[in-house]
Amino acid sequence: MTRISAERLLADIASLAAFGGRADGGVDRVAGSAADLAARDWLAGRIAEAGCVAWRDDIGNVFGRTPGGSGPWLLAGSHTDSVPGGGRLDGAYGVLSALEVLRTLREAGHPAAETLEIVSFWDEEGAAPTSGGGLVGSTAFCSGGHLAEITAFLELHIEQGPRMERAALDLAVVEGIVGIDRYAVTLTGETNHAGTTPMDGRADAGRAAARVLVEVREIAAAADPGMVANVGCVEVLPGAPNVIPGAARLVVELRAAGRAALDACAERLRAHAARVAREERCVAVVEVLSRKPEARFDPALCDHLEKVCKRLGVTHDRLVSYAGHDAGVLGRHVPTAMLFVPSSSGVSHAPAEHTPDRQLVLGCQALLDAVVAW
Image (cartoon, rainbow, N blue to C red; front, top):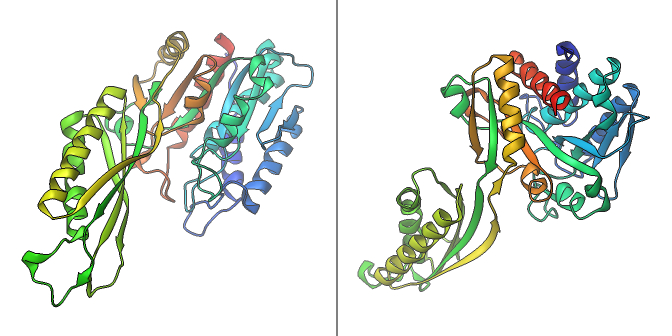
């Protein structure tokens, strides 16, 4: 069995974390920042040092392949940009594992190296103001001609949640990604003096918004117990302590594995907002901001990854991802699947993001075995 170099993989993870590294152990490497651009140059250099060819497309995706290789290609990778104050593993781990697989196979003279291509996609996170919601590089890639040369895509990633650690899993085969819907809920009441207006004569949009917000979790659970929901943006206008809010706006995000559950939750949200608005003498408007469809990964490729996990003799299961990934974009065009390693305490998008070295190495080895056996 061809084995990766654990020392080299872990050293690369530490080196990449220095680009945009923070004193608290986190990373600021938002797409297009100086740290992000420098990290992409570093990655291209590491590909070249491995005796491989690095190249970039027009959007900024970084690719690597062996000098004498020829397509069609099995593509493996992820992204190296981060959210502000993010962790050192999110995305980066998948890219550096793909690099380690490529150079290990090349050093071993294995024929699988000749048809393997690795990638670091541009702006997966969407943290830059001009990104348009993320998944920029993978979306552009799927609109280009190189897609026709890709036979399949594999993405190795940290789970970014607590399920694997709680179940004592070393690896998980990811069968798909949840759909993600975002709604703007706007409540309009009447601005007035907060001191002189009797409590029973108010049309308080702020109070109405609070009543909607506090029920979002219950609304989601009623539609689908497996759904997750969040209200991460709240705006109250005019925003003065002595003025009754005449308008308020919430952004509600819903994530579920099926479209039916998402639609059912949206209907419950509209009905609840309308009822609250009537009771608070306000008007409610619920508008769709964005919809990212759920992704279903290739069954044959998922079965293939599960066989790899079984041969390695490690604890494993199948999961659905509640975070978005480039694989969700690729999966609409080519056979795609993902592998997860656990996230300690379920922490991600934060400096405390961590996965034990043993599981980082195991995930990379599983990726190599999957490439060899595909």
